[in-house]
Image (cartoon, rainbow, N blue to C red; front, side, top):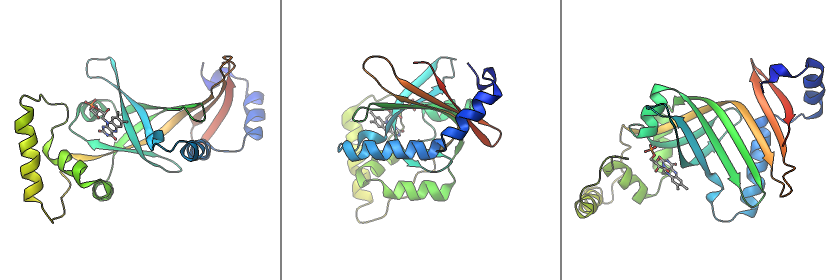
Length: 210
Ligand SMILES: Cc1cc2nc3c(=O)[nH]c(=O)nc-3n(C[C@H](O)[C@H](O)[C@H](O)COP(=O)(O)O)c2cc1C
C-alpha cells in the first residue's frame, strides 16, 4: 500500500506525533543494538540488488557509515553487485538486530563513492583485507587455491613496510533512502511497523498492520 492510499488528515496527524526523522531513528536503534551486541556484527545487513537476469540478488555486507542522509557500503565495483547496481541503481538494505529484536528495511537509489572517500575507507581496512582486495577478483572462478594463496603471499612480500594503494576497481556504494520500515518484533506476532516514505523533501510517516 502506498502513502497516497492514506487520507491526508491521518498522515498529518501521524507526522505531528512522531518527530524523529528516519535517519535519527535508524541511528538510535543502531546505537542501542551496538551497546547490547558485543560481536561487531550489528553492521551486517542484507544488500539486495536487481540481478542482470531479472531475479533479485541478495548478500550480506557491512554497513560502513550511516549519516543523516545516506548509507555507505564498500567493496569491489566490478563484482556482481557492482554490475547489477550499474545496470539498475536501486537497492534494498535489510537489518535484523537480534539483541534488540528490531528489523529495518530500506530502499533507495545508489551512486558510486567519490575516489577520496573510497581511499579513506580503503586505508581504514586491515592490511590482510587490503591485500585480498588487491589480489582477488571477487566472484571470478577459483581454479587452484594453492596458486591463489601464493599470489597473496607474493603480494604481501612486495608491499612489506609500504602503504597499499587502493585498486581502482575497489570503492563504495552511496545509498540514498527513499523508504524505511522500522519493525519492532513481537513473539506474539503483534509487531510494530512504522514506515517512512520520501515525498519530495518531506518524510511521510505512517503505521502499517503487523
Ligand atoms: C557478515 C558479512 C559481511 C560482509 N561484508 C561485505 C562487504 O562489506 N563488502 C563486500 O563486498 N562483501 C561483503 N561480504 C561478502 C558478500 O556477502 C558477498 O560474498 C560478496 O560481496 C560478493 O557478492 P556479489 O558476487 O553478489 O557481488 C560480507 C559477507 C558477510 C557474511
